[in-house]
Image (cartoon, rainbow over all chains, first blue to last red; front, side):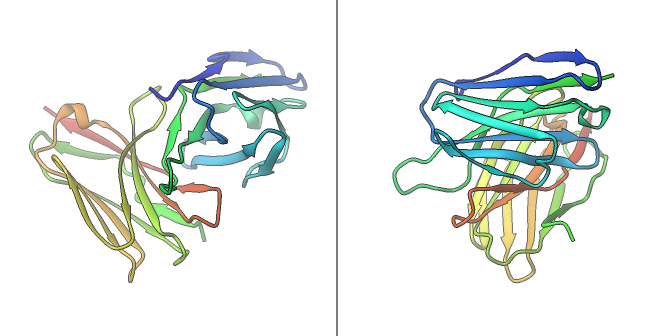
Length: 116
Length: 111
């Protein structure tokens, strides 16, 4: 258990509304990631963070923003939700131990978002 | 061209069969190669990782990397119904901060 909690786990919303998904970790890891998972596309990186207030875009960042004001929380915001953003969203942390930096990710349970 | 490509399946095998799952990647700079297993409605979990070329074995699972052909494989021996899941290959290079995933292969092991 990597101590990752995502909330909400399920959400149904309407087109045009803002949505914020929260990822909370208990182990003080520096790197955190938001992915979306869709059939036929696998996991695609939306945004990631390499420290408090340090974030960068992934391959599918349009329509999404993120914030990291504390080490333990990484928020993903859909400014104005669209039906194309219906997906399962996964938060992940990357554990780095000493000189070991292998890219191993540990995932949360996912947040299932439906935009009507 | 996607950075990591993977046979999407679905793949259905009888219990006890040997399963071979495969990926190719495009960037020769990738150094670490991982296999994740994802059960339905769960988050992916790391199954195995390898560094550079070669084989790595863990119980019934063997991960194989051929950097010359940019080919990654996962073999499952004596497959069990509990192995039914989606398997995702992934690559990582230390100058990136990003892990790149393949689309996943859905595997069903039939009792």
